[in-house]
Length: 156
Image (cartoon, rainbow, N blue to C red; front, side, top):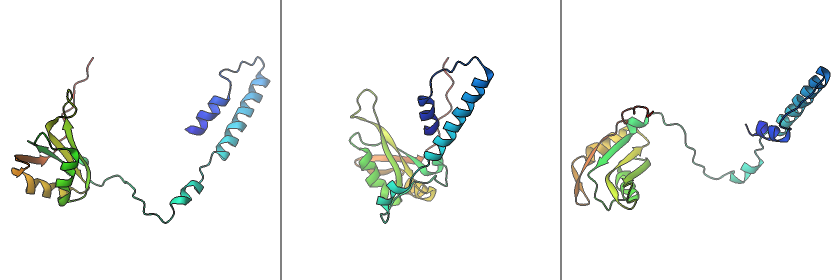
């Protein structure tokens, strides 16, 4: 919490008091300070007024799990980029993410596969049906619904 962080920074690191009455008085003053700080730290909506009337796109939690909306695209040509993947697959529905996986040692070279995440599971199924084993940029592309990777064993 930002308010409590600022409050902690304003207080001394340690308070050493010998008498119980002084300890209680210090505790009361700290709690009063915290309450007054919380009242003044309310967020203001004034900075958001400049966006009034503008079309705003809000991202909500998707209704379907990502496994149902994500497809694996394999056997890609080396020159295919994430933008190419996005532009090719957007004809089958609204895409949330399209990513070609790049080589670790050479970040300019594709590993030959990627993932496309659609907004709706129906779009993902349609894209798989329309693209599986079809030729795109000189290669027969392999498409299927992506599955979660298997859980890894902890490294000790």
